[in-house]
Length: 516
Image (cartoon, rainbow, N blue to C red; front, side):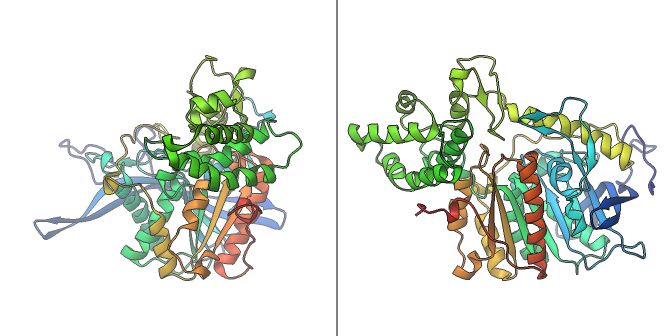
């Protein structure tokens, strides 16, 4: 059921008027109702999808000039309907987005949270084109309402006619735009008294941490929980830049996990391999890198031997790399003798590199496996099932947001760890769930563990952080056992966040013997 007419060629109504001037931007939302058959009974829900106008107060030389439309933010909101056919304002609501920068929310929307999910297959059981959709029996909608937000220039989100999208292609502009969309949605839907959660993946975790602090300070919004999936809260821990040894240290446990998956540690348990790598990274490896050219040749050979054994990389390559294995070089080198490279987003996937002599991977085989089915699914779903028509390109993940501005962090690392910590200090009821993929080569789990361990929090506040590990990659829900486990974990986290369930247990390397 559509409640707003649309022009299929242009999407939201903001066209040139009779004199060539743009007409005022207007919300362009479509509402439909659906029923999902779940093991516990049917779930009736309302889907509202389209572009919501977001603006700001305008001042001219200190004089208030009113409210000015600046952007049209595409979102899809799902609200469960009670027996009377109306939403329940007491239900929790989860605001979700992905990362990039430049990614739409399609991955969390159709991969994990939403009432419909993509049929994409997995490493050993790939689904061929044209792919498909199916009901998501594990949808989080059974326990919380969901709002998926596409940042500027992703999905169908665009600036208003005459606007400048580049204003939102950067840390603060992006944070403020998504934050304003959240505030407006709460206001327009009378949901200020609902339990509230943020959920981000990848750079979306950077954004979610920033929003937790920003919305608390700017609008007094207190969240019950923040879900960080494939977290990166300090880019300095994962970006390989000259003079920064931190990424080499933090990637080592991931390299060991990937090597284990590809048969380089026969007869050993994954947890044991990761624990050994983490202990080595935290001690001898860190000290060796810190010594630089002061490291003696004997010690250098010993460290190289340990690195080679843990990572599956030939010792001569380790030595030529000065004991520093850059991640794309590792993905190209690990299975070179088999004529294969491994994936970055999900290192369980492999493909022929095209040129067997490449120094580092050029194209990620795991991304293409994931991109194709999600692209087909979302373009079908929004139009055919949710009734939203537009001839704009739905930007799944785009380079059109580049260059991305981090001007706020000039001469220092890009980090939102303190934003999260300040929100947790201010709100002693704020809970945090962190999801790690052992085979995630984009956001290594040890880097996030390092940042979490250094949050400026009292001891009790660290107990409000729950960690869960999955034997999968960056989008861990591509792996069906991980998707099922993570869906249960998220239900438990929401229950804990609203006070109806116990604290979930943490797992993974943070609790493994051998860790300092």
